[in-house]
Image 1: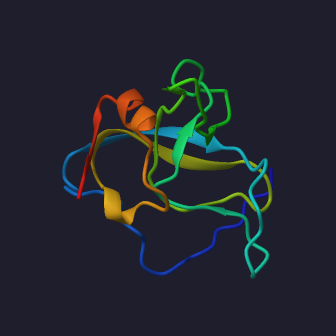
Image 2: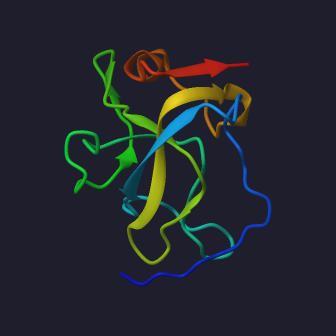
Length: 122
């Protein structure tokens, strides 16, 4: 895996209370991520992820899916993650208070229900 660090200047914070949270180290999958105008594949902070990473840390984290009123959501991506050159390291928020207005998309009711230790606030 090729590693290229990109500095985006100010980090986008998704937390409502930045002194109370828990993150896990994960690897974010690059499958299905579309390149932006600069040719970079960026998974934005605040993306709801799943993929079985809590049960097996060798799994790649992917965008959560919801079927039959059930979501496989396991956490929220803490920082923008560049997957231009393949799967990349990231941080998955599994406990904390998230500002819903800072997310790229509003989580579904099923995602909110699946993320029992995350509170979404306006």
